[in-house]
Length: 100
Image (cartoon, rainbow, N blue to C red; front, side, top):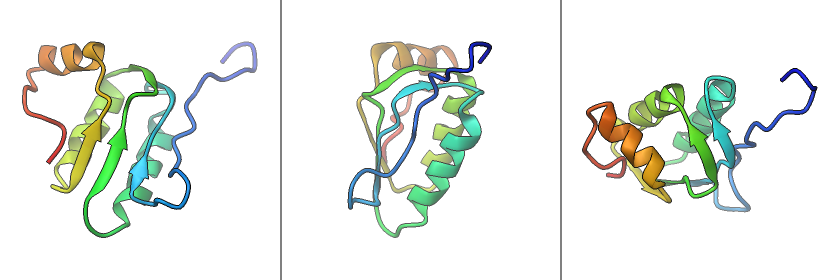
């Protein structure tokens, strides 16, 4: 960002639970690489994993594309989807749940 301060999220696995990811802030093209890396680490675990989006202030189509790709793994439970994000998903023609 121009002022040297970043409002990017710090997607990370919380605490001892390596099967839970709770990014915060914005998930846009600027954070896409870090978000993708966090998703890859999340799916390195076996079994169901969870993605909590309640701390996400804004998501763009780059982040949505990553979430839809992650959904194809067939073992992700998503919580905290804001009305704004759900509206964006619907506008893009995606009406299925992100969760499995």
